Image (cartoon, rainbow, N blue to C red):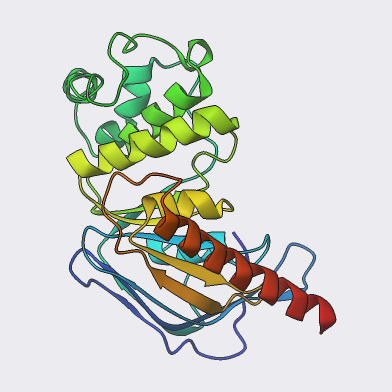
Length: 264
């Protein structure tokens, strides 16, 4: 985790705000492993109502992952405030333990909470059919496809019991066809198990297919340069004219920000 700068007191605080997400004027500066000062985020204000999915897109290095860690309480902002219910982070890599079965991997959050192994495993296994994993409870990670591993990781995240989920490029390592299938699966899973979600992705189409609102960040330090309210019914067709228009609007914002940064 990056080193917090201690040159001035932090005016920000963290508090619970129902089951939504509220960031107000958030800034984050830290020192990297080489000791260089990095201004990751500046003046970021974002909101997601309970049950909404907020997607965050932006160029590499613009502070997207830092934003998720701030929401989860893994880092503290230097400026502004972060308000949300307790949140859990699902990283891009599934981080399944190879020596455990799929059911035992999914049950890890329950085990950490103190539930005995048998009860934790039974509770996780009961959801396997709902997650499209029926019959794979006893399979080990090496026997699962990439998409199935991500489903197990998502089930583990759900079973943490947190009402706010932070998903950091959850499908970034998958091929295009599997990724599209997993996007549809995630939309269905969240319809069955509603949560407030902050999703970081490099894929603008993924953002507009899944999200209720999309925030576009500038190059570092990340600032919100565009915020789109989708307002489109689900399920969403990728060929829908309104969806295509929103995707192009987000892409224009990204291109414009990159051009401005390159010229600066």
